[in-house]
Length: 205
Image (cartoon, rainbow, N blue to C red; front, side, top):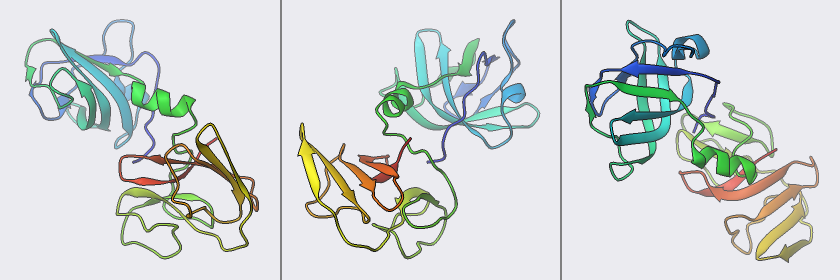
């Protein structure tokens, strides 16, 4: 998943109905519009409220007449965590940092890189046909970790989490979510977790 972008004090209204893209009707007084904060195609964290119904997720901002916000990934909502059916009345939509993102970021579990290709030990965003060199070949549009050859190194376990220092990503025993690996050749640290497309080693700050 592309790393989401955030901005302060972004809030607009919409009279969109249904579960599709939201047409943005302009900034609320004392706030800025999505168009002032973001560029076309950027993925942003968002929340919206329509009466007693609400929704939080990641949306793709699109410039146009009017600007729109595609509800790309709904993380939580009053509609069983699916897109809510907007009534067409006054709805407020704003830039929001979803708990999903904040929790992963504070635990060091969110990817720090999002690139189209890279060298050994980098997290890459796989956008097309799978390439060689991955620890585990990722599907299209998912994150993967490029492998590096070299001798292994000892690992240790504490509090149920494996900590490994080696030049290659540990594969045996099978890693568990939350395991950590430090690449001794680069000093880069990785966490093993499920980013929505499967369990894999992901670089973090």
